[in-house]
Image (cartoon, rainbow, N blue to C red; front, side, top):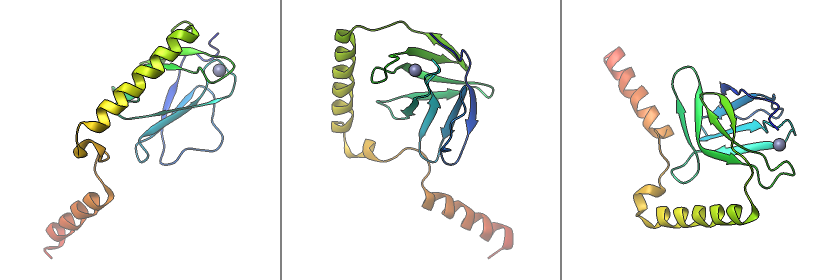
Length: 144
Ligand SMILES: [Zn+2]
């Protein structure tokens, strides 16, 4: 059962200690998102962003996560999709399906990390890159 059929998003710098139910916290700094399980059980669901974990899409108004979120390690075993902020119940998986999904996940990860050293680097601008841009901007602004 889904208690929170909608997740509003909140872009945060760091993840708060207390999670408000029905809110998806997104930290671009850490490349991850976290929310309180939509079934209402209160468990914290962490969905890190990576090519082999979750991908987030933000259309300016709402957030979608892909693939579906399967909370198999929680007693509730809830399984849902976050689509434009809406929670769509995705149905229960059997133990065999969970096992197969985990195996596929492992294969994907192995494949990904073997595909070259470049992919190991974190995506997005690094801290030094940002500083560089600011420094350049400073030079440009103040003619230094
Ligand atoms: Zn739950």
